[in-house]
Length: 354
Image 1 (cartoon, rainbow, N blue to C red):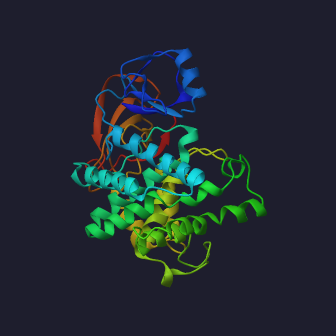
Image 2: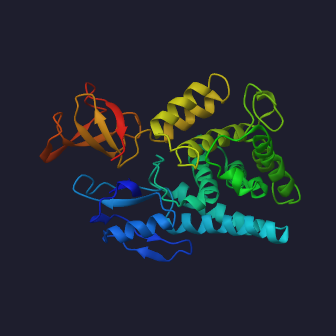
Image 3: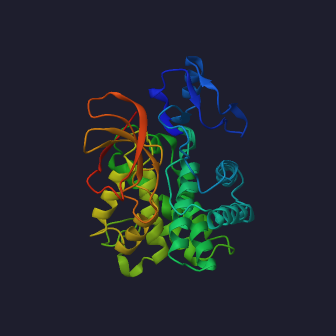
């Protein structure tokens, strides 16, 4: 299966995974043919992508670190607790910690060690889905850096709550389609401190988790916000969350820009590791986040089109691909696979939005 943008659905595609509404009820079941009227309803509900299974992607698994149910429940819990603070000036930290425990248990017991982009979200769910995704990314990388369990939980709690201060940012700023003006950006830059102030009232939250919330936009060279401190004052775990936060934000569709491709973002983060980001954290991130996620359509240097079938976990830049179209643009009667780790003369030139 593969993820496909809603705008590229032509009708009659077969769904590869169930599609759920905001309350966890199934809208469309896996195997359903996506008719035109279904596409319009999905667009109205804010869906950006769905999973489809076709002749190109048959048998390819878009593995997730989390069960779909866990991801959805975690997103709903974050949404509810953020709303609770606005309504009641309180959040239930114990419920957040239960979410974090479930996420950690599933990641640590997963056979997968590679993070693929595979979170299908709606436009309205961005803040909550982003919070969960940053947590998943941080725990995935942190676990394989051999961070001890206590620190890993502090990392996870800080990551899942890192944007809680955005509950005070007006929607017309969060969802603005154009560039923020100076006053709007100044307001946006307050959200880390606002989030820290919320959690500072909670003794269950450790100083390290609070530091992540306060300083996840600080940069190694002192160019970040809200405190403009440099590397000497930024905790190691906060530095990791900064990388995860930037990656998920940049690979997501936003009102003011389209999502960047995973490999482009990883290249950009690598560039920033010479000045703004921690090089060690970026290097660790690159070892466990796939630049060419399974299910992505790619163009090879020989002109052929292929789909990424699976990952070489010790060489993520060279996955196994399934070639389905020749260099002349002709569909092959029989697709074949190439292991790019073994065939070094073939490489990926670009990913395609198909």
